[in-house]
Image 1 (tube, one colour):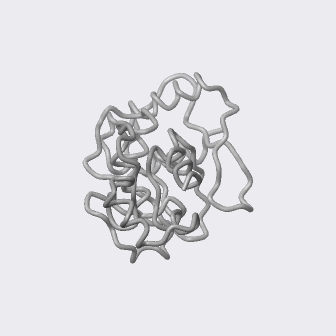
Image 2 (image 1 turned 90 degrees about the horizontal axis):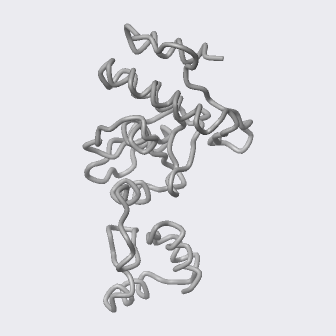
Length: 207
């Protein structure tokens, strides 16, 4: 039991049914603890410790874990917000998964984006949440937000990179993937891109 609670503490109070089973707790025993207010049932397959503080990103964490933290990463406008590259609050939780999961049951309020299963996606961690790296996030949202918003996000990304230094690294999704740093456009002025395609070309040619 202590092992499960330690896992929950490391995940801001949440744990999954599969994590409980790994600690030897059956579904019947979980239900018993829920009736005794030892645990809260959040949704199918997801539980939390009662009274655990709920941070601002609690909804994103809940839905990310409900879909499967081992297979999904927060992306697009959700990642944009978590990376502090936008002040806009997304009206849904955006998740990126491999195409083999496209038939997955989608919780309400979740937007699923898919990628080729073999594609390597660089990711970063923020407060125990796994999300797409800043450069990948900017590419993903380039065709979804207004040019002014994109320009502001690129500026914010450039400032963040300068503040944290060039040594920050992100992780690929596969073990064989070499670790590398994805870079936002840097240097003097941020230009206004005429299209999402132009922005993507600039990202691919960034030094």
